[in-house]
Length: 164
Image 1 (tube, rainbow, N blue to C red):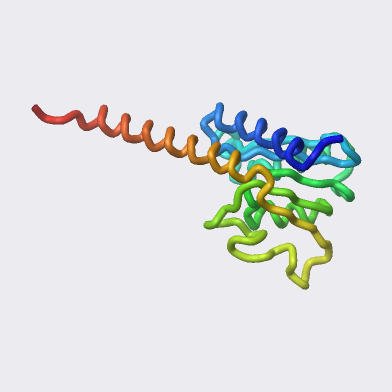
Image 2 (tube, rainbow, N blue to C red):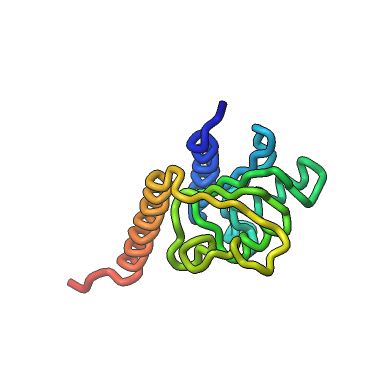
């Protein structure tokens, strides 16, 4: 039997795919009845698509696999707290539950910048849980941004060599 941590580890593997393509490492999977029905990772840069967040990619994949735009009884596991766009898509897809690893203080809408899923005007209820493998996901993001900053610094130094 898979645990929450086991499912999140699969989402973290998806995030590794994003990092390997120089995308922010966020990954997601969708599980229904104990089976992965969708997976995705951040790819807005490579796809030239601002909506290509991990959650959206996983929802698209799951909907195609099951042949329905609704995913009742499904749980979405994602390595970073969803943004408002993704939270809206989760509602429209009728996903029952969202489990995320790390919080996103700037744009997370599940707990950091608001409690979107608790809004009384929504026509669907989503249960959410944060913090599953949060340290692992946070470290993955930290390493990625450290690498990105080092690359930018290196490019800047090459463009502006010190004058002797």
